[in-house]
Length: 356
Image 1 (cartoon, rainbow, N blue to C red):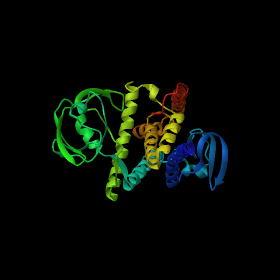
Image 2: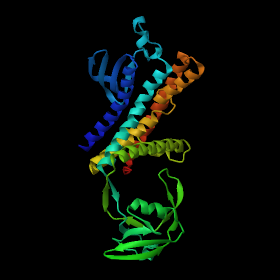
Image 3: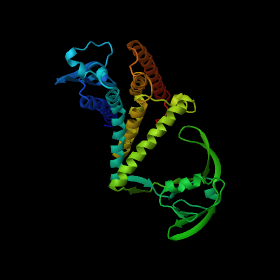
Image 4: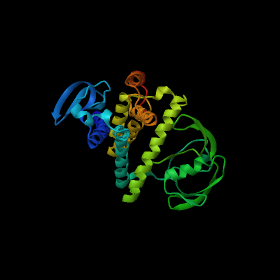
């Protein structure tokens, strides 16, 4: 069932992306010839109205084919007004941007319901003490609950770690609840160099404790759920952009790039841990799909938007020959990236590397 969940997730996010293009094309009165999930030979197809709906053999994407999208396509004079290439720059840009937008809004909806239903948060209860650590030296014990740091009330593990990480080498006063007894303990976090989520070494404060598996479900109000959903989507979108920049800078190793196999493995892993984790993972993948599609690479949505921006500045579109050459370059780049991602996936499988 977890493998089926991964396949359904992949198909659903592609469907949402293409649905964005499809709906905005219809709103703009552009004729949609085909709506396909997947590339290559069709497996199932059915024509409804003027559009052929298909499931194709290669499940690594999808597409919406609009009348006049191909610059070399001949269009009957009676249908010129409904062709994509005869629309205004604003309309074409809205159709192109709608795909990534739908992916980002899908993440917002998932996060909204996650915050509304409630997300488990770790309590500041110690589950393990590292030997020869500041915590061991201060006689902290397994099961201790940290309730205050320097007079600030602590309710969640994340609140506690945020203060400790920012206090390397700085003495702290902890108020600790041990069974029915309350006590005050002085401790100074060690200065340690650790890797952040991008693999860069940063200095942080650590006292040598791990959390107990004690959580509390925090449910947000309707208004806060909406607000937090947009903020979380924005935060993860920004992290995705930063991640791409750091990949280009070679700060993040290119070996970390993953393809469909890794996505399926991660989806399977999250599905096995519960529905909430799976849907939150779906939101993260949806954000990645939306943001990466906005990269200014010809053939991606970002490449199309780049050409439309040039058209807006020049007051006329680029030549069909220039666009065709750019698209060929874009296809080569995408195929190379996909091949490299698949190589990394297969390398991980054969070397038995654990799923992140």
